Amino acid sequence: MNLPPLIKRKRRLLDLRADIPPALYAGAGAAFIAVFFLAWWLVTSLGWVQPIFLPPPSAVVQEVVSQFQAGTLWVDVRASVYRISVGWILSTLFALPIGILMGNFRFFEGLFEPFIDFVRYMPAVAFVPLTILWAGVGDSQKFIILFIGTFFQQVLMVMDNVKTVPYEMIQVSYTFGLSKWEILRKVILPAALPGIWDTLRITLGWAWTYLVVAELVAANVGLGYRIMRAQRFLQTDTIILGILVIGILGLITDYVFKFAYRALFRWAERRM
Amino acid sequence: MLRAENIWKVYNPGGKDQVVAIRDLNLQVGENEFVSIIGPSGCGKSTFLLMAAGLDEPSAGKLLFEGQQVEGPSAKRGMVFQSYTLYPWLTVAENIRFALQKSGMELSAQKSLVEEFISLVGLRGFENAYPNQLSGGMRQRVAIARALVYRPQMLLMDEPFGALDAQTRRLMQELLLNAWETHRTTVLFVTHDIEEALLLSDRVYVMTARPGTIKAEIRVHLPRPRQVEMETSPAFLALRKQLLGLIKEEVTPHL
Ligand SMILES: Nc1ncnc2c1ncn2[C@@H]1O[C@H](COP(=O)(O)OP(=O)(O)OP(=O)(O)O)[C@@H](O)[C@H]1O
Ligand SMILES: [Mg+2]
Image 1 (cartoon, chains in turn cyan, green):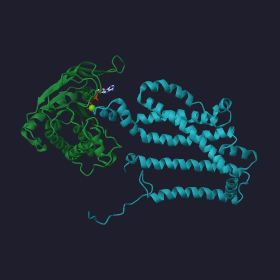
Image 2 (cartoon, rainbow over the protein chains, first blue to last red):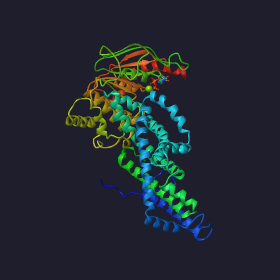
Image 3 (cartoon, helix red, strand yellow):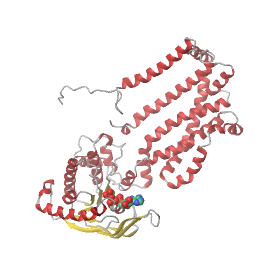
Image 4 (cartoon, chains in turn yellow, red):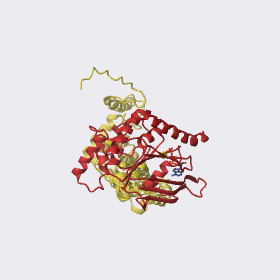
């Protein structure tokens, strides 16, 4: 089609909900992180804080190198990632079917919700001493803490995801002759999936907190353990490295989920 | 084909929030007839359609479809809702084909049928679009194609054009007229719009305010095939006046 010369759409930066160029979006995020590190570098190199409280970035870089050579970084990351994967997957495996049942059948909602609400308000962290008595300080104790911390939130969120499927969509599916199980499988699940995907992403982020808390209290390997041990020797650079590594791992998993979301659920994208 | 005898619908019976939505309603729809129900908001039109579809149960009375008590939903009675009920993860073509999965047709036959209905509702070129890329009117056209494609014996339509602007509404009415003339089927159509009811229907039932029951039945003796232009004919205007009077009586006391 022959188009007239197109007027470049005016992009105003701060219009409500308006899209901005992707480069600007990504650039702003990167710049903010850069400013953060710059401030850190300034504050430490100007001597405003003592290195024992906040070491300069260079010290943390050196720490990366030495830990990398010693192999401890890799050992810790592997231990923590293994624990969080198993704990979170275990929780997800239970939360998905139970949450889906609760979202679809009032009976299961009535059956489980009071109990889940009750346990949900017990801080997972408070279970650490108890779980050490049950399972020692090994991996299985971490799995239990991760499960307690993640499962009860996940179930309720999955239930809500399922409930967002409009009832009319279910009703109209009956008029095509589908049984309720077919509707569950072919209508409710695909419709709820983007929401469930986000639930998984968000709860994985929370799971890191529970893992590190469990590792801080009792472990002999792992990122939380490394942080705890460093505190005893006032190795702030090691502590900061540990925190940064957790942040980076979280960021990576978050982005993997977000990109997968975009690839899997193009249809769910908001239309401007 | 569909026969309602002394239907009552009471929500939360005996409770503090008891609502008598429908009171002693009688109506019938014959084979290949196009019948509309018109009535004030909240008089129980949607409630009745849901019961006719088998998606809800009457509190009292008999609801017969081809002589048999309606028990649960079935592919014999299709429904088009006012709100958008397309599957957002399926394309236009996939949405329409979804309704054919119980038809036992071969995939290739399904696909050509889907194409035929996409043309019928004027959505050629949008086969692979997702619902969130369509306008409101386009979505409702997909919903209509999806409800027609599997040839249910009866089509229940609950204000399918209620959310559309006047222009689009006119186009959709023509489209539905056209689709109905080519694929004759039994239709029970709910609307607020008097012109719409007259233009489309063989008969129009007027309901009272809640608790709703049938107040009048009007036979629309306008020749077919019909066009939107008929709305200025004297016969049409006379019917319109009659209907308007009937509805006014129901609406005004509540204003
Ligand atoms: N699930 C329900 N529980 C309780 N009351 C209900 C329920 N569904 C409908 N009602 C009541 O029944 C009455 C009829 O509702 P219905 O939706 O059938 O009206 P309607 O004629 O379709 O109105 P409109 O033209 O506005 O769509 C209303 O007063 C409504 O409040
Ligand atoms: Mg209604």
